Amino acid sequence: MYKYGVIIYWSNTDDTFVAEAPELPGCIAHGDSQEVALQNINEAMTLWIDTAREFGDPVPEPKGERLMPA
Image (cartoon, rainbow, N blue to C red; front, side, top):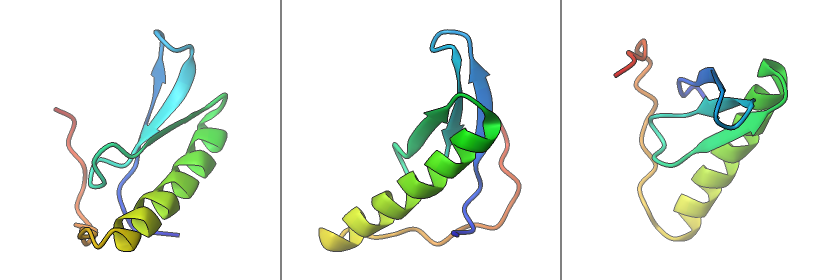
């Protein structure tokens, strides 16, 4: 498990829970429950990091700070 912050919220538009890892641009997942969304974002973070490494792109270090909504 990675130590990146994750934001989970309900999306009325998509009628699902959405999970985002803001420190990994574009890393988003969803699920029918908060638990499933969290499981899916953990998998998405693994894929995001593996893909970045495969292409030689930088992988940001987790900031370890509280995420503030925009």
